[in-house]
Length: 475
Image (cartoon, rainbow, N blue to C red; front, side):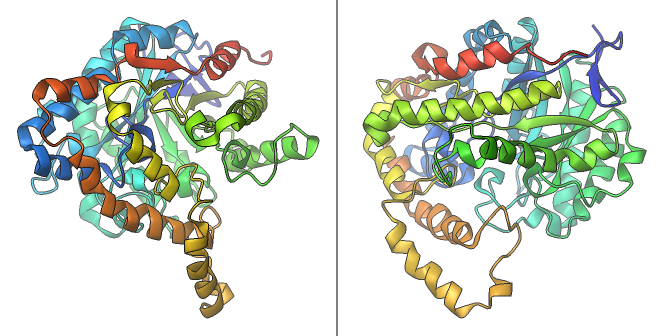
């Protein structure tokens, strides 16, 4: 078997035949996320808090077993049975080095990554390695695991040097693995000056290529993989590179401006949002990969009898996006494969030890809207509206929309800082306290809640993905 590579606008095999990658992201695994796994705040916070409550040994047991159970042979077999052929593997740099011991490789970081890559290859599934979290935070959101809304990665050369070093280590380790479709060096950068991201890509490209000339690179656009307009001519020096957009639609979230009915106006908005992200790339004949997209779904414990109707509406959005993608023969990776019931193709049963243990806490998180992703703030909106009004009153209009506007509106920024950073920080210890007094066996059972055998399937979503897995327009 030979490496996949980028040729013009296509991904091709060793014979030059087009390969369209269709799959999902394994979000919430080697880069845990609050809405996916049910904790508040950032991963580094809950890891520290759990160690404080149960001790280092038991804390490490939980997280290691969580990683083990989250994706196993049964998961790979199921994924392949849907007709999908590629999994994007997001990971946190902290698995490979410590902030207090930088540039010293932790060999155990490869333990689960190697295991899952090998499982996927056994089932004929390609993988794409995605550095989802970089030192200092490469973006302004919780999933860069920095605990702040300032992307410090762009302000400290040493953070960037460490990521270049890490990719050199990864390239050494995986250079000969042909089941890896490629490397995604940095997830969703948000560089307010737009030029530092391009300079960094040039550095990391050269560093990887000095070790691994074979694997394709998938480069995210700036501002959450949406903006390539400042990339200039740098791409002319890069070979075997695809460019990643993330094509989330507002119609797939609780904040949708109206009910989605597939009207011509709504379809136009879907297409326009997608086309704007890739326009710069199309004008230059470059290869596009949709690294993230997909709606979120209602849950009966929160939305009650409206749940099924809401989800059917979200499936409409999903189908209409896929129709657009099929016409372009687009490779894509939906977000995401597994979670606790909000967006995953499979999700942890509410009868499991984890979901039983955290039932009330999860309801509290939902009520307080402390997760940013798909938040429904209706129960606490009245608390934050006076703060929004104050800023609108006291801050000049031209100073109200700070980067990454327009992705973050003024109200979104206040929500990110007040709810998702401040309030969530106060709940981190409460999450960890649920483990107090648990035996190693009990901790293992809690982690095992995430095993495939303990998960339910989102059949509506999975059928749509299967129906579209090989459906493309003619060559």
